[in-house]
Amino acid sequence: MLGIARNLTTTLDVDILLKKISALAEEKLDSEASAIMLLDDDGKNLSFKVAGGTKGGVIQRMKVPVGQGIAGAVAAEKKSTIVNDVSNDPRFTGAQDKSSGFQTRKILCVPMMIESELIGIVEVLNKKEGDYTDDDREILESMASMAAVTINNAKNAEEQRNFFVNILEVLVAAIEAQDTKLKGHNMRVTQIATAIGRHLGLAAKEYKDLYYGAMLHDIGILFAKGADGVVVSGGDDAAHPVVGANMIEPINLLKGAAGIIRHHHENFDGTGRPDGLAGEDIPLGARIVYVAETVDEMRANGMEAEAINRMLAMGKEIRFDPRVVDVYVNEISNRE
Image 1 (tube, helix red, strand yellow):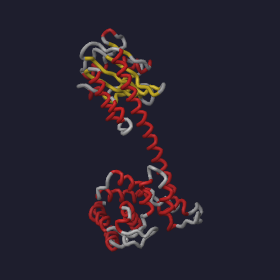
Image 2: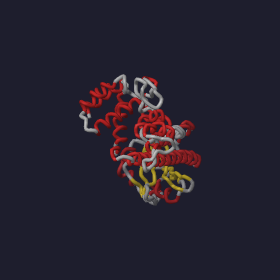
Image 3: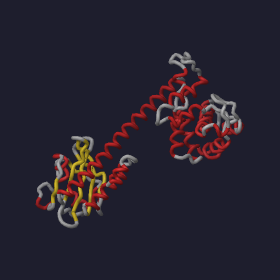
Image 4: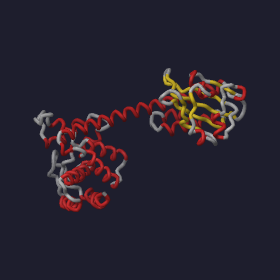
């Protein structure tokens, strides 16, 4: 249980953690099966998230109406219950048994709560030796609390991700609104850049930084010029990589992309801007985005793939990293 509790702070994979909690409940409470059910958004039904035991796969496709059956009653009353002989409990419907072939004899069922809000239930079935006790109930309630924390953390993280994605979409739309020729440019550059990154075998963090750097490589355009096209804060169109990098760097989630944004117009021979970096001193992500952006710009001007590849080849060692060009020409261009 302590190991699972530590995992709560290091992963948001709800399915994995809930399966661990379910398996641990079966083991520690000496039970034949277990289940974790979540309350549907409409508050009317419980849906199986995890179902252990030999018949778990069949049971997991079922729903339990709130207020019906023992699990439904626990959900409606938000109160734990122990039933050591289901044949004498009028709440027991046996609906899951009929569909799965499993024979339920005993149930210990507890609610999962976040403060006063029900999010689901946890239950174990058929204690192998003896009856379920209040000590068993306390153990399962602790596990239910852990499951509730896991689900709540994951829900909050998903909401944050959705918010972040929406903000990215707004920013990209604002960038593209500066010039009709930019419509779709950022996404196309991102698709090309990440394809190159995959072929180069980038690590997970490098790949994530590349994605954000490619998506936001022109964000400085928004602030190097005002909405009416007038230069502001000493900015100009050539300065947009610096302006964009300075905007992104203070944001923890995006700061790894700042170098990509700042240096995506550096030439491989050191004649580019803003810092005149050369060769391997230029961040790899920036070298990738430079090639990806150039490809998209040439396509927008009506150039065919063969001509684009020739232009990239001519720019090797001068503007572009030869390795990045070779990956694009040999692995990506001929497959698009």
